[in-house]
Length: 347
Ligand code: AHG
Ligand code: MN
Ligand code: MN
Ligand code: MN
Image (cartoon, rainbow, N blue to C red; front, side, top):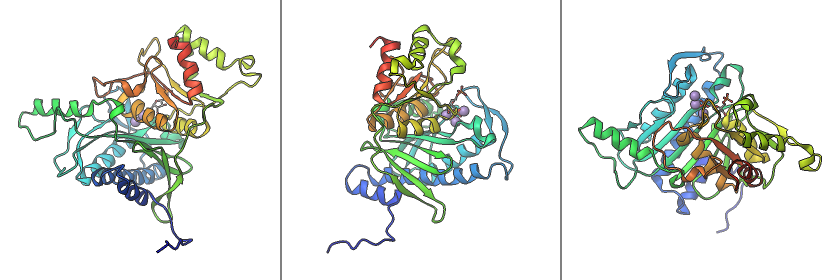
């Protein structure tokens, strides 16, 4: 029987997950993990939107492993993410920007997925109401080191670290949620990049961005030029080139930078161009963390036909040694990223 299409039919993240399962692109366990992440994003969206009202702006007083002062919402978002992943019953180990070490999840009874996440990205912006986001990556447990209950806590910790420290090329899912003028989830399960916007009227993420492809070439560059004096000569030469109208038949690039990777990346994904957080004299490996910022965003960029690189090598090829390891990140349209690589790596 031909399906009667109804004008009331909506295509939600849940519908999309069911279709991806039917196509064999995800299994039921992974779909459950992703649905639990979407629930966390709905809760964080509500918390972020009401931060000023419910006294959730400002500092928590703690410091995370990267040496950053934690905002109240960093800590709260971290708990929301961890609670949703735990109650999914499909998560084996979680690693977070806001947790020093990975956490084994006892409640998992099947699936055992590994989830790495940045619960609140761009949190320095939260008190000013500027866009923030959440970023995640999902891996399967590593064969060499299956997660099973071991009495020895040191051995258990070693097992957890081994399970989260996987290269981005092994990601089964990566995505982000942008908390901005709209709340939008953008994710990939290795078959293109799809975006879903939260409809507050029904509390569902509705399909709004189908199989997103990043423009081959853009006209926006997104760097914190406040660090210019700390950059090396190659990068400065690249920056001068990008800003030289003569090099772009009279039309120089525009600069856009909001200091939230999720917001800056989302604009780059849709409009094209390049986002960069280079290493510099103070921080040779830059500021961004490979596991829950560079690798998940690079998986999305590559799935959308773009590139994500440290300048020297593709981010997805790097085997993390440490959970909070930093790497330089240059990500966006192929044309701009390859031009950058030409300047900084002589490619
Ligand atoms: P987080 O808030 O999760 O610590 O991430 C902040 C990151 C990233 O979101 C952003 O692009 C970058 O820090 C901004 O750094 P600067 O303020 O040094 O430009
Ligand atoms: Mn932080
Ligand atoms: Mn971040
Ligand atoms: Mn963060």
